[in-house]
Length: 128
Image (cartoon, rainbow, N blue to C red; front, side, top):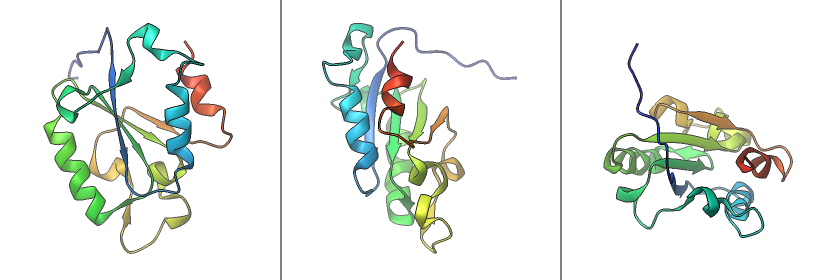
């Protein structure tokens, strides 16, 4: 079994929206506001993909967005992790079975799935 180097301090997030309805995007960004204050743990949005540790993907991944997603993933430094947020990113959501929709799991190795059902779900995951 391969050993994985774990990010211990200040994980920086890179948010990638593949063209969703923005419901999950709003929840991801709302969880990063001063109300929940994840910066006290060093969690913040990275200004560039080359500074990011965790790639947060929202929305249904189409073939064209999938190509960009792979390129972004390859540009991230090691160790790198991927978190799929929302039903569309995890399983295709209402677009599952469409000719151009893929899941993040088929393209990249995922660290975590977060299916958002209620708006408060992601905030509960980020509260440590």
